[in-house]
Length: 219
Figure 1 (spheres, rainbow, N blue to C red):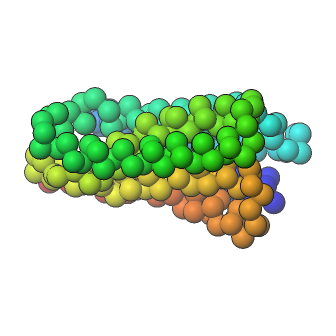
Figure 2: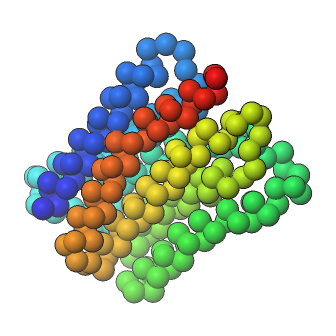
């Protein structure tokens, strides 16, 4: 079952990445969009490694495996796309947006609380340390996804156009965390399948939703 679910994630991420390359790498397009496409590509590579590992080994190794780098890489791209130029456009650092910045901290704080819960159950080990590293990058990205989801719009709907993408990315971050919880706490088969199916849907929807949003930038 895990092999089939992992294969499904690989295929869906591959379709999303392929569509993104086809739509945004044939001509000029914003670096913001290309970074997100690369993020989906990283997710595809990570899922592919996990699929092959399960196929060859019958299971995934406890602790670090290269597949984790795919998840970390994807959220590093999502974080980098939102951090810097995009964030400076929507937030000038003034007190006007202080409340939004504080509220956005809720996402990484929830991620941190989940990791602390895992450590309290299993203690410090290679597994929980690598889970913590993975969750650190998820937390960084989730802060900006939530911030750009709730911040007041500026510059003729620039941020409003990509709110659906930020919502999907935030959902994907917490689905990845649910995937960890499924493995750590041996949750029911129904929950396992539900988490993986939702991840498949999000990976397929990433680029079309983003494409629909960025088209509004030129209207």
